[in-house]
Length: 103
DNA sequence: ATAATGACGTCGG
DNA sequence: TCCGACGCCATTA
Image 1 (spheres, helix red, strand yellow):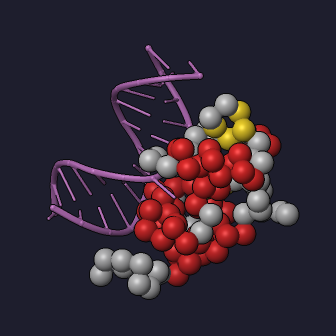
Image 2 (tube, chains in turn brown, green, red):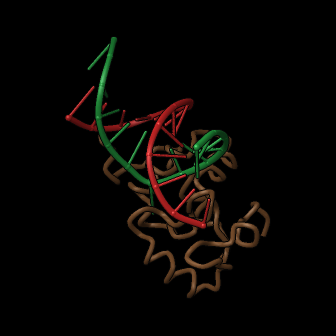
């Protein structure tokens, strides 16, 4: 089936919906998203982002250590500086930027 | 059915 | 702090 961004499966919709909910200036790790949804895992979330992430604020979904998504590091940095995301050098400051799901 | 791959995570050196 | 090895899990070859 190759999904190919025509009809994303329910799981992908949940991931994308949550990513859209992430407040400006905050971020979540792939593992956090999976844990928050209570389903799938970091790799599955990463797959969803690579396929349909272009329609959501993908720069707010990063690695657990604060490093941006592979191949989009420059874009992430630009967005973060634009939004005022707490940074620590070239990485996001997870201590302050991590979103727990509460506004 | 087995092996390789990937927008990951954790651990050891 | 940086890097490599391993573990995970769905998809692809």
